[in-house]
Length: 283
Image (cartoon, rainbow, N blue to C red; front, side, top):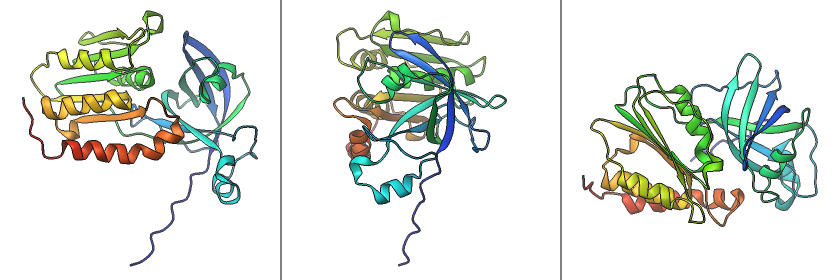
């Protein structure tokens, strides 16, 4: 058997901070001007995401960073760290890309950076990737998620046809974290406040209690992996939604940073698929 060709790591793209905006107490939008020399294919999907590069703690990297060389020549603890974020919007004319960051003080890596970011500061990223956009032929849409899914939900609402029918369920910590979103007349946006409760409990309850309209559903459900797993089971097995009509995945997992979550995500997803394989729908 011939050896598989090695996949090359994409060349990172350069962007500079144009401005920042505090959307809510815990959400910061960073608008980036993408280098005109960088090819950027944004627009097909509403969940486009980029992988932002950060130097290892206490370190730096040359500009532009050669990720393959760094991973080849340095011990793992000195490799650049990546954090994945959704592209909230992109203006092809100005090449300005908006990315929203959840910020909890000094917790984490990307959030503190976004809170401190200043105009002119350089940043490198890889991507974008993506895979979902609301199907205009669906009879209705369900968009559900926590704060991490809010940028993609907002981008999907911007894309929905004016006559689309949609239910949007967004769980945030409290009313101060709500954002103004574009919503067509047939779109019902519901904000759920978890307070001190576990992430996703209110969201799972709301989806389970939802009266599903007749017709074909196209659903987008993303956020913390534990509640996403519950909702995947509910939608696939109890509601009988076909796999091809679901965009559903864990963006993050409680108790793990992105490095830890990404290293276990494939196994987690495979376990969920095995759990649901061959089980009949009950509705």
